[in-house]
Image (cartoon, rainbow, N blue to C red):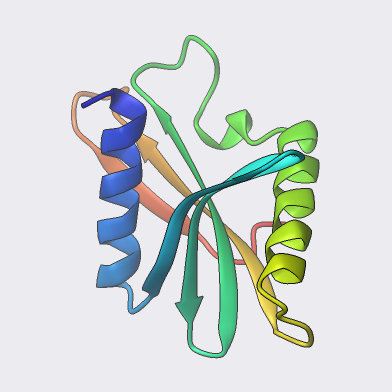
Length: 113
């Protein structure tokens, strides 16, 4: 299993441990991709998973660029239209996974953007 796939599985496990109900993974459309879609209380959550083995390209959080955020938001709009979900409270969360220090550190950032 590739590092990215392992990271998404770890992020999904972390979300479930924090009370989320994961609905779907790897939602893709022409405009972008959403790693995980989940429910957290009354919110539909679009979650970006970013992982780093080392800091050569910056931290995991630094990997969520303005361009990436635009693509995620476009993909979320597409998802809401496709599923006919209007008037739903939505939120964008990020799960970062950092293995640069030898261990694995997972962090959940709610309402990240």
